[in-house]
Length: 621
Image 1 (cartoon, rainbow, N blue to C red):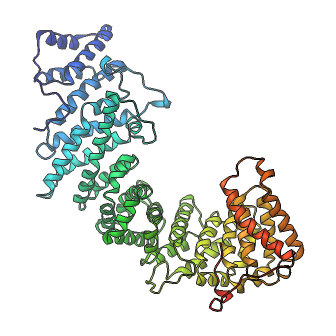
Image 2 (tube, rainbow, N blue to C red; image 1 turned 180 degrees about the horizontal axis):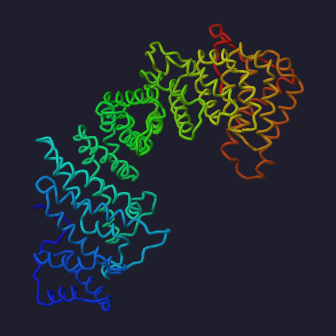
Image 3 (cartoon, one colour; image 1 turned 90 degrees about the vertical axis):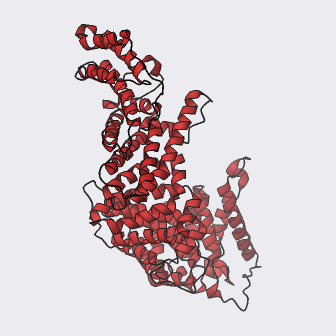
């Protein structure tokens, strides 16, 4: 028999204890306060004991389960808890699966019932004296060694699965075990124990016990991952295990252990669409695996690289994305998991992976990622619901990270069919249609993505063919500061092409840029002012006659705005300037000096070599 968390010394009953049991059975309503004291004594004696007298104790407790006294009911639960963990410790999930099924089912129910009270009130503390430092029934279970027991039972199950395929009761025991662990891990008490942002506790025995609880939970993570792998052909059990892992992924220590298994989780994800009987049946597990991987990829760079370097994991992610993209976006299961939710989580996994430069650049070459993201954009570009809008923003975030790593003007020599590189022009056209819709809430994000993409010459050409300059004119006169700034980023790139400057002048672009600069300086928005300076610089960079291209009146106004924005003494009154102003001051000073040279009659354009024609020059900032 396997035991855990319970003392090993034998316990011998005495006449005094037998009398206590008899008195406990026959006590009447008038003796409730004595019952409570007796229950406390029973709890103290049963929590670490052995002996056949347990039946007598349980028989005595049975008569009190309908008591109206909260104190007595809670004390009864405490005694049963002590016996329950001891009983589980004597059972094996392989040899005695029924005991584990009912035992962990009871743990799951009782621990879940202890997580709160109606109306947000605090539970009244009717704990035995020696347990007064414990704050909930969950703590009672943990202090009885339940975590250690769960880890032991999972090891037994996994070891048995290496020699034979599990079925029937052992799998049901695993189902209840993982559910009980999820309930414990999701309780607010243990969440406080695991919180990584709390200051370290003093070196006390209680603090050491909490650290041991955390360590035991971490040990369960790789065992659960292995259990999920062996249950690929048992979707219900696997889904329950994955639900538990999703709760554990919210704790930083467990998330770090999950990061070590990132590629294995990707393989699991890829298997869902192959083993699920219907689309709806696979949604729950796919949704939670996406949540787990999203938590992992947002924190651990090693997991990003590991996942990317495992072709099976990466192919599984891309295949799952493609599979759900081609399904109806209205599909959902009975629990509320939907196609849109799954896609949102998986695309966030992708976006977080691409925070790593090597991964982001490599993913832009992978097929069929460009095709998948383009199809999603086409389906969600006019969001009608909050879920669709969330998916739109997630897709734009992924595109932003994927396009961030392009070199200026780069065109890959080999373009894989369906990759981001190969579908870049089509994606640009779709983004332009979204940007042109004044009612679309994602316009700022679209402009931010285009700010990355238009560093490539072919995309700048596509953007202008899609009437991009007219669309930019609307954005640059918007009252939305974020849209204005991100649109200015696109202008900086567009004006890197000599041929686009005349068209920009036709839409009164120089006047618009001067107004943006004035607005930025006036509002002390140094990001806005700085990017306006960059756009003006690129507009004037190769011109031989600044007055002709900008106009004397506009030059004077720009100079005044720059002088105001660069006056550090007035702006900061002798205090240190902030970093954003420092960034603005660098480009603002260069631009002001250039304009002053123009006004002094010493205007000279930037020199261009014979090998570099104006229309191939990239943006300077």
